[in-house]
Amino acid sequence: MENVVIYALSDGDANVLAPLLTHLYDLAHFPYVLRVHGLLAHRDDLEAVFHQALHEPTLPRFVHLFASDALAQAVEAFCASNGCEAKDLYAFLTDKERPKRQDDSRACARWQAMDFTTHFDDGKHPEGILEADVCLTGVSRTSKTPLSVYLASRNLRVANVPLLPESPPPVELYRLPPGRIFGLTASVERLMTLRRERLKSLGLPPDAAYASEARIREELRFADGVMKKIGCAIIDVSLRAVEESAEIILRLLAAQQTDAVRTADEMNRVNDGNRKESIEG
Image (tube, rainbow, N blue to C red; front, top):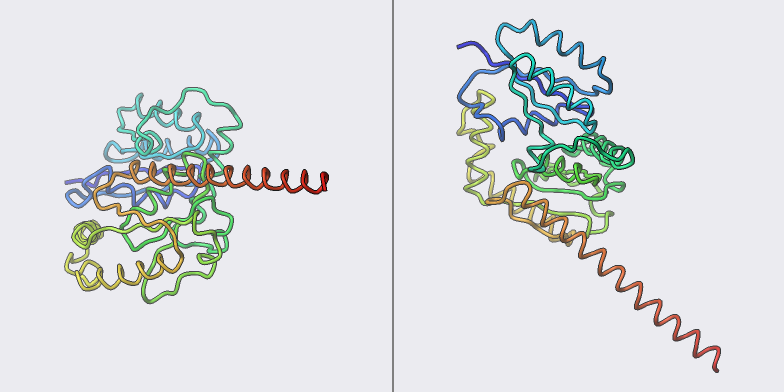
């Protein structure tokens, strides 16, 4: 069997798309070659990729995540005219069609959120945590990256931080307001299944320590302690799709904003009353 060639394209860091492929394809059961092309900002950048794709020995597949609707549409048009399969991760993660036209200011905000999120993925550059609208944290295979990308498509700047017993969390994680941090957890059984599949996709033995029950329990105990110390909300993603977890986070953020407005209104009423008493006195 010849290798299936998969092109992963993005106008940000395309390397973050690799973990999402397991949600799209059963990679453990067919050989494949992944060609990653990131920072594609212009149509000319795509032309070079298209030229390479046309010279592949087998018909390639395309997976793409663009803030730019124009670039996404260019990939879809190329695939349609050349018989290639294309998957738009924006549509996949948001479960809706990409808009045909979009207000420039909204497109810019989404691009900036995507760029931020890919830059601060998987604990890279921890100083960015303090600039994030949302920070996700948890052990490996709790959907941190897919959920980050989904939230970025809703114009939120997201950082995510993996938790490992051997590596203390960055100090920035304790400096961010806990209402902007969301801990992700899952059952031992679910994590064992996901990790074994991940190992198989990498050509590694599925019984490695990474997927053992003892190791997973150790990581979960450590992560639970960190999350409780932070005081953040904890979401069990075991049986939840990415969009379901995202909706929980969005609801919690909206509730916080409502509480903040209510508190501000109450403080204003108290201050107005104090000023009135001062004047009358």
